[in-house]
Image 1: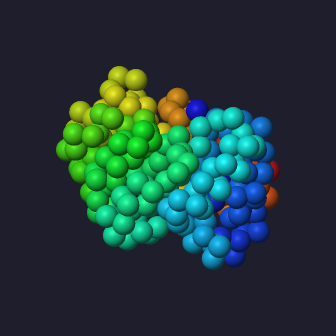
Image 2: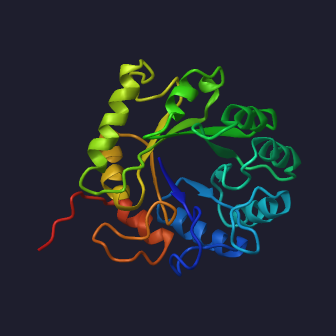
Image 3: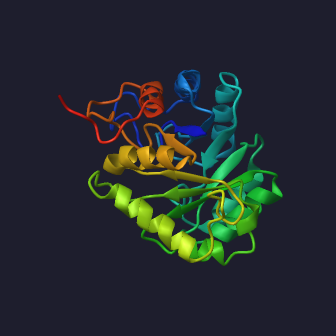
Length: 250
């Protein structure tokens, strides 16, 4: 399974292809799904271009994207949207249109409470475990760990020369804790492995070799495997579908 992450915390200043309005997100998501993406992950944006959990903005974003695609659509609950955990929980309680799932970063304060609030609303939880953080410790000790839709193993090493090794070390650490099952699941939930920036392509290639779900999009990288700027999320999905790493240069 390949998910497309259409924008992340980026804005048009990071690259002209980054979609920020509901209409632009919907158009970008539709092209990415046509290229082979099976799910959409999106960061709804305020009129100023900031990530937000606002009920009205989230509703407009979800309605636009669902009008363009017929696949599950998830959103972020990152602490940068609302630094105070209780405020994030209040935002979730105010949602009038619900996403299919939402990501929860377990290294962030209030992660367990945010996950519980999502589950109470009937929103599935993607549990984000970032390398180099205490997220895995907090997740594995939580009674909610077994209720995840999937576990996002997020490799934060941006160096293309070391990101694959960092990913393998993170996976090995999870395995040593007895958290990884025989099917590559974490506490019974499917694993999605991905990287970021310079590490996005080598980690994606590793995920494909291991038979794990993965994701790609302008949230994770603005560049194609050969270093050229990506013109769209669909272009990234097409490249991910046929990924070979490292890139061979004639």
